Length: 378
Image (cartoon, rainbow, N blue to C red; front, side, top):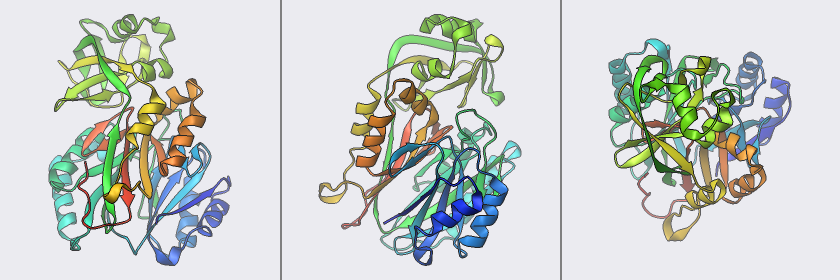
């Protein structure tokens, strides 16, 4: 259904050359290119332009890949979406730091209006965003509102586990401070997926001082944010780390559900830097983890018509989940689940689920061979 190509070559031209031999470009509508840390982006875009035979290529840098073998870190992963089952129209967004909400909404509406709807086909939007832009929340909520009934899913671009500059590929160029929306139609049945592995505890905190535009919390419960968080999770301030943040997330309640607001760091040992939107007065609830392998397997147990399993799941899996998984030495059983559930995708710096930007969450779109009318995306 969806072609999958993998190369471990460190030379970009050789990597693309190896990958395109594994897919049928003549039958392909578009390529989704998921790039490992360290692969030179300029030569990579040039190789795609020269070797993809005119097939449009979109994608982003990643914090890790999910290949047919499971978790990986050094793979150039190219997914080929066949014309037989897919139609696509792309809309890039540049200069996110200065974007106008109204302009984004107007562009999205015009973009959808220009994309004729095929009778009986399902429509969805995939969004790829610079994972360090700090604009994902407002962008995806604006797109979901503008597109109304078209569900929006996606992931924030990454760059390894180091939170360095991230890039999005569109129009043959890798850009930072940018995003891409792919409006997609398919005759396949589809189902949206979104879940984490945390439950709320009774421990709550109130943001009493913040710099929202920088996603920076200065105070929790009237105390220095890092110190108060460290006290509540039982960890010395100087021992706070990505692993501690990943295993002790803070949750926000929205529409009767809890979403993770992940902590990125503790700059200066006083403030807390977040990967999602925060504001003064926000109530945060400390989360408690459940078994991450069991919840992954259960969350991916989606079924199509007549109880069939998906033919493929396009997955957006938070890098903080991967950090926890690797710390607990669970990479092999998680990769086993991904293989069995036919998941391909990448590790993100944030996830987009029906227009909501979240963290430490698995988001995906499952595709099934069509049997009657398509399922509504959840």
